[in-house]
Length: 161
Image (cartoon, rainbow, N blue to C red; front, side):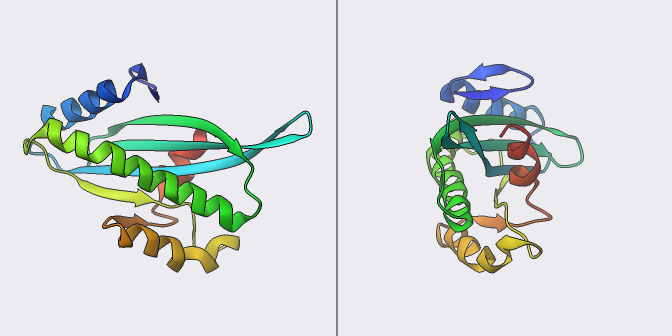
């Protein structure tokens, strides 16, 4: 299930319909479809879990957009590197599941630029990982964005972790 601040809880078919309808409403507009993930460690009763959130953002450039998010709990990552890999892999997995269904539904009637947003940047502890995770994303055929351009992960997904 994904959650939309506008539409509430949505099953995957309803999510695809919502995104496709948003794109089809203004077919001549420019769209960016963004998938990003973020996570934060949560502890309760001495047990650490990692709350992972993936966001799908459909941005009608210059005219706003909508976003949808999904959260889950996993075993806490042992290192920052493991955490970033887990977030990136979750975004890639989401793209690989979501995009074929969306493209079938659009059936050539809507175009978008896809970006995978990764929560790493040139400043801070994650700077040494940029090439690795960008390579993971581009190796799967997607465009990667890092901080400060990776708002799908560092702002939207982060808001719900």
